[in-house]
Length: 121
Image 1 (cartoon, one colour):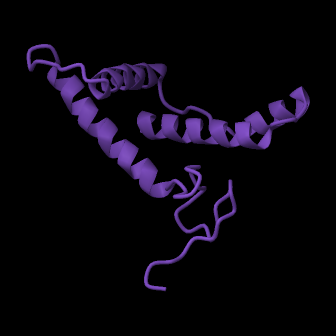
Image 2 (tube, rainbow, N blue to C red):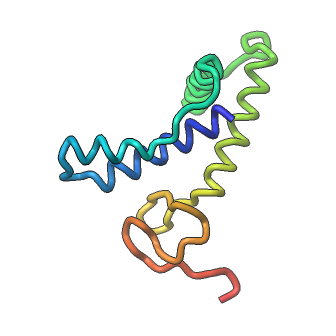
């Protein structure tokens, strides 16, 4: 749940950055109220940050021997991959500009306004 919350927070922060280009500090502060509040204990988010660091190292090509990772870390990396795929399914990126969409049913991109075609049409 903490991983999903972090993905959604980052998504909303990115959306605010896109929309608040020339906004005043007051307007930006109001927009930041859209960021979902964390509801879990801080320890869950610290563990999620640890998993993000391990995943970044893994993606950079740093290999881990089985003795270097604890079982809970290996399990956590599997959960991180699942949470990332679920997030990407909920918020697909535009094929033209790469911006993540509010949901997968949007008729057009919120960034470049290209019209999406529905499958089977």
